[in-house]
Image (cartoon, rainbow, N blue to C red):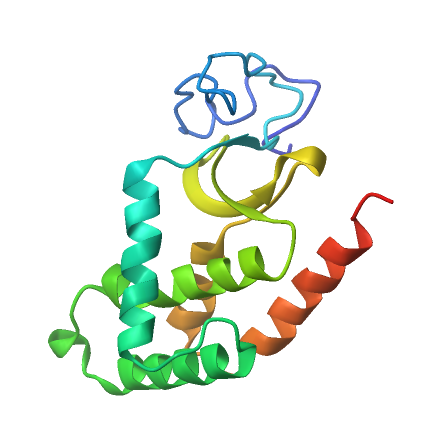
Length: 179
């Protein structure tokens, strides 16, 4: 039986050990988000970022600027991420620093590129599995979590992926623009 079967109320996030920390606040900060719906456990809740998230984005952009990476140029962003990934993979595990900190500028870079070149905005998104910094569009419940895009490929040592993935996401957003 799948985790999210409609037939068994014992399935879903709670049965899988994922706590339900209540609904996310609405975009205006009010608690107007719909109550948890076990029939739609993966529904994304989108809310505005706060000062801490804005500072996180600014710090990531500053780090990329220090590396000479142009966030508006997907080729520059991709080449920089490829170098960073290769350097991380080449460093013995015992000599590596904090992996999240090493990835953070690239997470921000991917998100900021999408923000600058589409209708997406920085947001906090929450689903049954937690809350993440994302780029999203509330109008059509669309969200991308850059940490997921970068993190999985970083851990696998994958390079060369960023321009194609970003181009695909930009095409998807363009196709969803209202007339």
